[in-house]
Image (cartoon, rainbow, N blue to C red):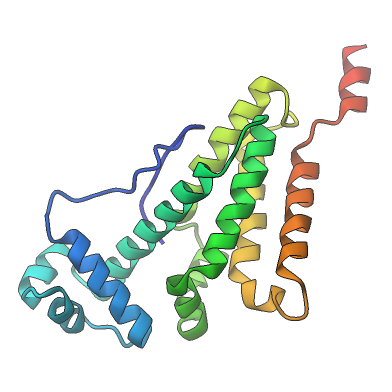
Length: 216
């Protein structure tokens, strides 16, 4: 889980890129290897062979498989965020945040790469759930923070510490992604997505009664 991507709400929508021409081929080869073998059985030799480059050339760019997979996950994650944002529609910042977040969750749940990691190497994600945030999660926070900040300005998001609100949103949304298999057990995915939308909207909607009493 790595690097950053910013936007329309503070997120540029562009994943980090190296100046090296072979990076796209390397990540494509790494993706093929992970889908075929899982993360633990993927090797630098296998990636280099699929990319059509020498192992030493690959090693100069990525010192180990973990760094390649981190770059790959960042590339995939940022592409999904960009795709979700294209469908955000019109409306207030809160409405667009909810639409984008639910769509991003849907696309992440359907991602063959993430599903493969969760099916074969889920324990690799554990440090990012119980010890520290990865930079991909921090990129998601930057993405969400833009909407929250805009929502404070247009009055559609409840006033609170934006960093705390954003962290809470991240923890909520990522639980729907990581627990996708459990969530799909006997539950209609469409109904669950609608419930997530309602939960997000309710969490962010201004408390009008409180606002009126405070202004009085």
